[in-house]
Amino acid sequence: MSASPSLLATLDYAVLQQCMHCGMCLPTCPTYDETKRERHSPRGRIALMRAVADGDLQASRAFAEEMYYCLGCLACESACPAGVDYGSLFETARAEVERVGSAATPQRSFWRWLTLRHLFLKPGLLRAVGQGLRLYQRSGAEAAVRKSGLLRLLPASLQRLEPQTPTIAAAFSSDLISPQERPVGATLRRVALLTGCVQDLVFPDINRDTVDVLLANGCEVFTPPVQPCCGSLHAHNGDLAAARELARRQLDLFPVDELDALITNAGGCGSHLKKYAHLLAEDPAYAARARAWDAKVQDIHQFLLATGCRPPTAGCGESRVTYHESCHLCHGQKITRQPRDLLRLIPGLVLEELTESTWCCGSAGIYNITQPEQSAKLLQRKLDHLANTGAPTVATANPGCHLQLQNGLAAAPGHPCQSVAHPVTLLARAYRAESPS
Image (cartoon, rainbow, N blue to C red):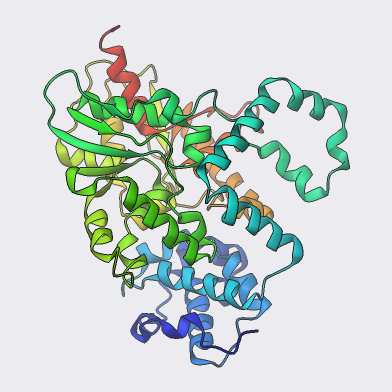
């Protein structure tokens, strides 16, 4: 254990004191709802963080387990009347856990080194791994291995994870999107698209759909071909140094001053991308640029509604849809009305409201990997609510949620909902249906 001051002690103490212990957050917290234990609530976790900051408690393994049992869904922030910045406290607490090494094991350290420090720091390497996985899947090798029974030789944890392996797309974003694309008519705005990392490998079609929707609304779109990870995965898992490095790379890649907006279509990424100014506040070379960046980052739904999205004149091929809200889109970015309003613009599409639409689906970054039991319970709760809508399609705006719901529905044959789509994908389909060209 390190004897130097806790990272929590470096925070403005007013942030730690802001919690009034009123309990408004308790009914909104999925882990407290599951256990009814105070320490599993936002209020309880903040009390633990404050004790660590005060030096009354060590950032022990028990503290680490509590911080990583938290989903980081930020539902507590939406419920909090005092405006507690739980997200910053949460990320700092996890960073302290990693600093002192209280959660470290050889296996955990290896996987963090491989993923956070290599794969998700090096976009070229991540793409190379994606291409290898794509070959493995499309050659029939994956199906043969599954059929052979060889997977039974794997450790139980890997056997559980293997079916959740995402299908790598046939082409990445740079294969589908030119670095610069202009609308057919007048150019009203110049924007850039942030393609993401998981989105780029698994859902590049959503990035293509996003560009098409922007073009249909008079935007010239600038899309650098190979973009780094935004850093949200690192920040949420206690590696703030890597998160800062990735933020600097993003700032170096985009001509922020020449753009009207920087567009993100992933709820989790967008929430982090809007906080570069906070992340780089102490960096004299990047602080001002980060503030300019934050001012221009906009979620695609937010941008389209603010600039006057053109209603399509044709339908999207769907008659009914429901909407699951990404935690970091609704709680982190406070964007909840705009995706619904975009869906309602599509002729002939009926939006069925989803019970507990803002309740976490259990994906929460890598929560479905680190806390599989709790994640599975949250997923089943979501699937039950989806079934009650009767809608054949659920729309959601985050790749983690998309994968979680997709895997859950694939494992539930006969479920009335069998399709997952991004709201922008449905809008893009409607625009394309207007004219065969």
